[in-house]
Length: 297
Image (cartoon, rainbow, N blue to C red):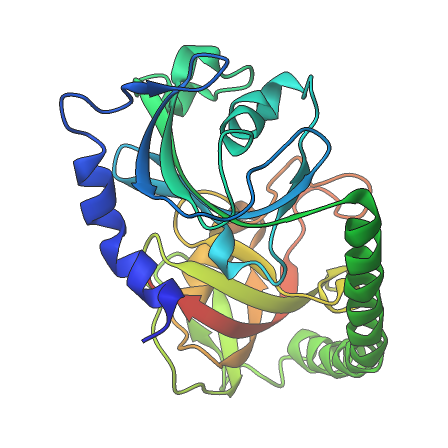
């Protein structure tokens, strides 16, 4: 069992312990409360370091973000005066040594851009694990390596993007000519789809994190967006209102690994307003989608 899986399994217990009466009794320099989950004798952070860390952010029982799913470990430079929106996290990282894990308690009223849906919560909790610390020179070298990987992947996906665009155009022409009517399936909410290749993996449930490769087009075959040139799938939490309704409705029917075409009516897309500049009002949206990964949360 990997350390990552162990961490996910132990997360509820860790956060339960961090919610005891004396939770947050330790304080950072700026006064944020925190609890130590694990200490290590690694090098201690200092101003100017580039911190490599994973973070799980929670409001109540809801996981808002989990960086373990990202292709690269997040980094932050530990500035003496960081921007307000990341000040609490930088303040906490400055207290940590490589290998440490903590729960940081951040009051909602201290967040500059807290959305209305979180105003009912007293605080946001960040489970932070400091993985490494690098100097400016080490960080620049690491970024060069990362960029080389990203560019190589993007180059390989450019050809795949062209292939999917051509494939999607052919399907749209057949769809407009009513040649696909016998193959179409329709959800209760009116989203139509055709499965090109059915996957064998997990079915997503509400709140699961999913990764989707996609190409989106209009009925005139004009492509308005694609994940392929970016070199990585789009990641989001399904059925939580993060995307258009048609995506949630359609992708909920597919197993991990499925390739399909979604035909999303305007009411389940961008509606009467459209999405400037590429999606006119009242547009049906057509997507090639590959449900690349389902991560149970």
